Image (cartoon, protein in one colour):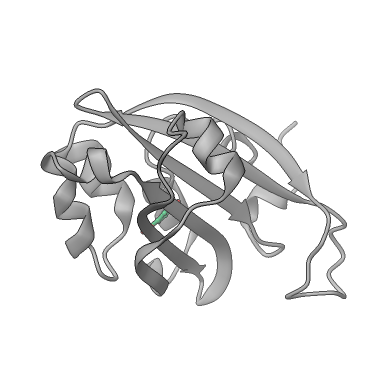
Amino acid sequence: MHPSQWLNYYGSLTEEMQQASSAPIRVEVLRQGTYPIFDDERATLDLPTQRWAWIREVQLLGNNRPWLLARTVIPMTTLKGRANRLKLLGSKPLGPVLFNRLGAERVSIAFEQVHEIAWQPNSSIDALWCRQSIFKIDQEPLLLKEIFLPENPVYQKNENK
Ligand code: PHB
């Protein structure tokens, strides 16, 4: 699969990124634990009364370079089920556990472009792709937000087009 197709891919992106990376894909956990959720996340998850969730924020490195930032929001109600094993992920990537062990289904993908690249102000890319996915695990929701960083192959031109 060409990286230009990654954005819209409903399967495990980590496996696709691994094929494009000569070094093993690495997950750096930025934080993981019980934290407040944002208003828009509460609205998206349709959880008007919940203020806290299990939050996982990671940076994904391909070719030993930062390729992606990901924030996972797992409501407490979702954590009560089989999804509680997601608390133990550590630096293992989310995808394989989500897809293979928990049988999660991605029920939607939404896109937006992010214009503030505070972490890399001189990047040649003026907008980053951000996608927001909702998964269902045993009918319970999980929200995943992924920001594709400037060095991600998704921004490469498709030479074969
Ligand atoms: C994660 O391990 O949290 C993770 C990995 C890859 C992604 C998203 C999340 O594309």
